[in-house]
Length: 368
Ligand SMILES: [Zn+2]
Ligand SMILES: [Zn+2]
Image 1 (cartoon, protein in one colour):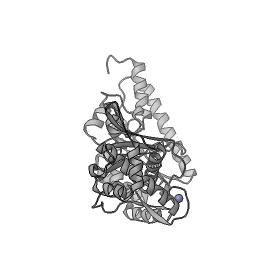
Image 2: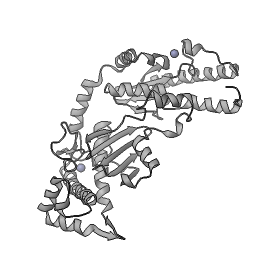
Image 3: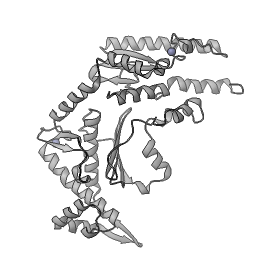
Image 4: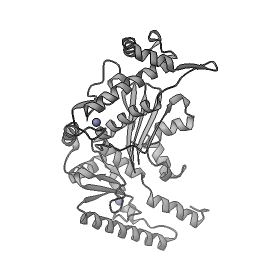
């Protein structure tokens, strides 16, 4: 600590106090996620912006650092060496604010629990306690969610539940299909509309990868057969191809590609996070993976949570994050079929779905 100006130290520690996505929090999130629990993060509309919220259970969890929130334990009792009065006052204010948050939550009908940093040394014990607090293991509930999700209304337009949509669409995958492909309720009109655009996108990507619209040159046999069966589609695809300065390029209908990407994202948020969103997303973005810079690629693959509030690089917390918690970046990618489709959902202040289609097209859809 010597050599650090008090003001600089203070602002660094202030940030540490306020930060979301701290190491203990990430640890608990991963523990609960693996156990099958699903939750929202840092809900600003609830008193104290609880770290984890379980809306269907009307329950929240705070993850507190022992020192900063005055836990009655060894770490919590540690006395700061310098500026002791300042820190004592600061911690007292935190404790007071925590109390007010708990009161506010209770008044609003929410149950709240605090998980302390020191408790996380015994992961099994924490999981047992939290499971009890939340009213039981999620496994049965996940099953029920699954049933409910498939009984609901069309995830795209809120219309009638007439059929199911697969996410990812079957046309994007090859046989044998992975078991238990997630499905979401859909109305017949949406389902039909999407299957045309999905076939369009699947074919377009094969043509781009092959550099040709000729079925004989297409890699995926299923798509080659589809193009052969549909001469009008074959003609449409052939018309997209052009040569530009010795390079082969395909122009395409951006709207049709976006339709598919948003459809997939809607299915994923409805199924994975139980958050059906029929409203328009705040952003839709896609680009070939190979067109990304290394930094963009890294951010796309690993950028899980709010990077802006992470500890500074080189700080001890950051080292722990990188060394002990090597998979600290959110909940990770789900590889539905290698080289065909992978995706990742994250929930923070908003919902975000990232997808890679055909190992080629990187996509992101956000609802803020
Ligand atoms: Zn403690
Ligand atoms: Zn619909």
